[in-house]
Image (cartoon, rainbow, N blue to C red; front, side):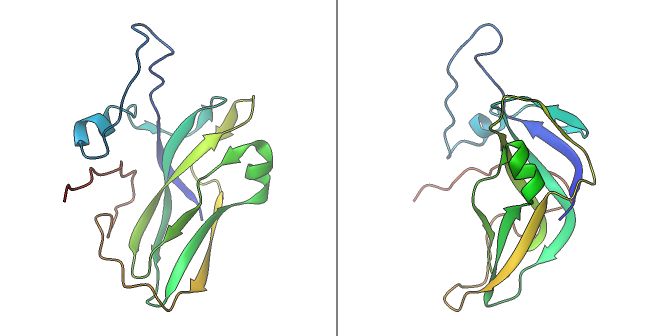
Length: 150
């Protein structure tokens, strides 16, 4: 899969004054938004030990009875980029927002159009169709959405 045009880096609250600890409450939309910086156009050089969110330009539709296993291509992994284990649920439709972590000691250039991820469809006879909050994501980054209590 191919990268879209935008990225947002996780804010490093210890990098600049007033040097404070930032807590993210998964039930509070404002605290989630404050954990990420402004959207910026690719290309960027992802700093060492930093995390970002980016999106694919590819629109996917995961058929009923399958899950989409998202993986990073080998060259990118060998450079030090690590995505979390990610699946696209049965019935998901839209553009994916994905996380990357630069585990290396080097800046790594990331550009729009880079072919960075693959998706493998696996049979999943037990999964219900996806009807979640991220259904129909547009071709841009979707920040995490606050959980509902209860």
